[in-house]
Length: 84
Image 1 (cartoon, rainbow, N blue to C red):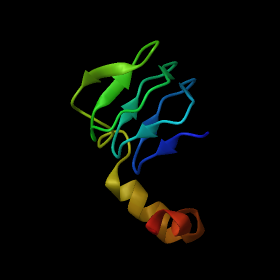
Image 2: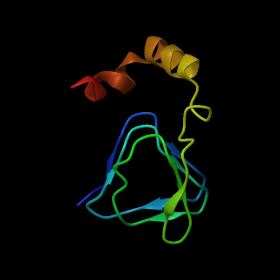
Image 3: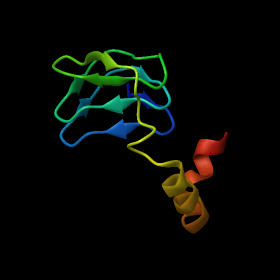
């Protein structure tokens, strides 16, 4: 049982994510958080032990779209399985 992580999710340093859970697109996970339940609302911030919703900001400013576009262009193999 492994977590299913959405697109453009920011995972802070030291965060632990485990179990048969889902993390929606655009979520920002705070550093050292422990995520052991699903978060299906997109574009929110979660943090804590255990993690809970802390804001409505998400990862947009933490994972800039320009960086994702550049990565996709320069390293297309990374994104092959994500486009299904």
